[in-house]
Image (cartoon, rainbow, N blue to C red):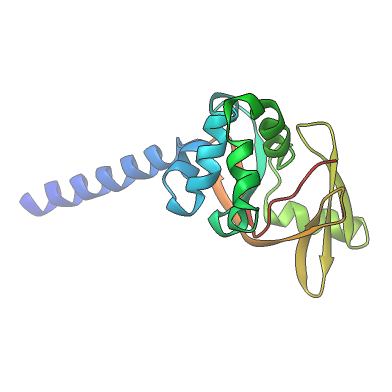
Length: 170
């Protein structure tokens, strides 16, 4: 009997933990991952946390800390100031697409678009996702590239794809 109770408890605990994890929004997932600490700081400074905790679904091309490390520290510091909240929000929403595009969806769109697809971001501008040298890249409107280095980090309201460089709108 004790063995049965133990097994049922283990199954219930495992099921409950998966349910809790499935309820985490993309913001919660980012907060729980220390490699997104700069992104989380920027989302807070731009007052975008509650928006990205909404129903979505969203696809976020999320720069990791190393990507933010490529941005001049003076520029990044300036963007995080309250008076530059709108500019920062414009940059961050340039990394977000309405709808949930898992890696398989991106690959399918690339096949359909002969290796390239243009997506509209939440800030109203577009980014180009392309296949180049056997990798998937994002090209911003200034012609800069960012490699997608990890895919399909799932949240309850969307998906995160990790990128290695901050992309910039015009």
